[in-house]
Image (cartoon, rainbow, N blue to C red; front, side):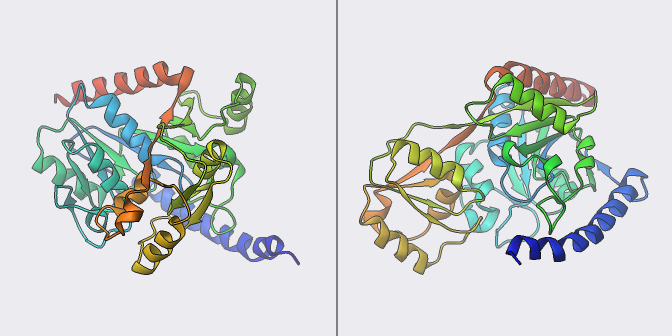
Length: 341
């Protein structure tokens, strides 16, 4: 029997048990038996139904750029992979070990935006607002499954190549919740869309997702910041779904190679030695911003650091951009007006 068949045999019944557990949990929240707390400041939650990378961090960064010129914005995340506990504010002494690699990536880009990490999202927002009472809006990263906090708007992300309607619950598939829970989101964004996407492809996706009348659907592509890509390039990544970046680099340098590590990988001295030895045969080492936030305070050979280039990515809504921006800005303006902030 092939591995895929074996996986289906043992994973399907476990997924069924998992489905019942998740259903009961969500029912308790839906019926207000378990409390979902409203916090004293407007919130937008960005999340997904699946495990793995769907583009949450770039989306939070997009919202910061969109909203911070007009409003006092803050960001709260769990701080996945950090070695600290409890509530931690990002400051000039922070690194990936204290606030997590994704939060460190954002903090390096927006050092003047209040950012914090806390596993307890309710406590985290309250503490963040207490320390920064001027904040008018908190953006919450990876919060869709955290039912204990009520977000005023949810933006749900799903990658084009693996829509939640085509996936299964863990461990059979990658879903943390059933596809039906997408109804909690006001906005659904299909991320990582191909450049060749046509209007008919959007209609096909919309038919598959079957959104409710109150939900808005948008499509985003990956936009790569231009960097120099020599023919002899090594791509080093510790992220989920690194193939998107490698395929892009390969389109610029067909002979490029890669070293792939697990998502949120903590690079050891042995890893650095391997990367440095491999990099001797290349003219450039391209990595992601998330990886760069981990490399930042590590001791790297100067020959390696001199070759390293951080590849930034951004969501690109293309023809959807004006409408997406309008919808988000209108929502935030109404929430802040209602809150009297």
